[in-house]
Amino acid sequence: MADASDSDGRETWLARLSTLGDVARLRILRLLERQELGVGELARATRMPQSTVSRHLKTLFEAGLVQKRSEGTATLFVLRTAALDADCRALWQLTRGHLGSSMEFDEDDARLGEVVSERRTDSRTFFGRLGGQWDAVRGELFGDRFTAAGLLSLVDPSWKVADIGCGTGEAAELIAPFVTTVVAIDRERSMLEVARARLGDAANVEFREGDVAALPARDGEFDAALLLLVLHHIEDVGGALTEVGRTLAPRGTLVVIDMVAHGHEEFRATMGHQHLGFSEPDLARTAKRAGFASPRYRRLRVDTERRGPGLFAASLRKA
Image 1 (cartoon, rainbow, N blue to C red):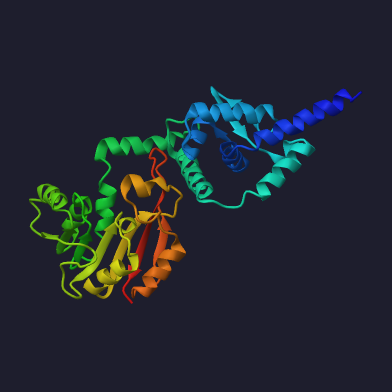
Image 2: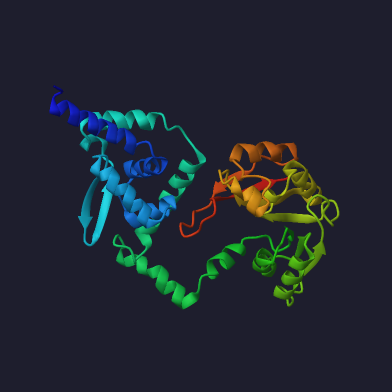
């Protein structure tokens, strides 16, 4: 007759194996190993519904893989390997060692950084500090646009800037007061009409209809150019960068804002994306072939309330 303790141990082991066989729970464990988090924070970092996160946390807690404690009305969860029993610790370490890397993990990590950062300054969370209220007070007094306007004062006022793929003219509207001329270019006439309506009073903004593959501009016409959430729509990125480079003056600057490399394959079908974002090495290689120096590539802070992939900003100087 089998020993009851052997049977219990086997059932516990199999239950833990089953628990670790779910990718969503593995994503949660990766984050909890790095940071103690509440349910809402985990939901924002993983972009899962809070009810889903709560269900997974219940399973992980019952399996002995996470610990929890209360702080005020909040319950916080964490994975402390030193607190796990020997079998559980060995199983997690073996599993973690085989996880490798993925775009989904990278996006979770980026959002976690933003969640922790907001925890330090957001007075509405239970971790808030009194000084964090200043953001709200400042917004009530002065709004939320003055910082961008002040920083744009650093731009050379003699510049002629191309806003390529200008869309509704948001970027052109922001930069026009700080430079000599903005040329707003878009292949869609309907977009240009919206941009004209938006910027009708700006005397230093020109509108041109044209495609990035054959820009309506002279060689070396612009001191700087903008490509904001445009490149992922273009099949031949290298050709587009070469064409933009043609319109830039020697040592002219191109600013690119776009999505970091991600795994949302559905974007190809639902939104016509040609590329699933761009990694720093891929952009650097393409830029170099197009006649630009290696870009300065920076991931932008993640807005955890939004559903899209993370973004980067890159500055490319014409070689």
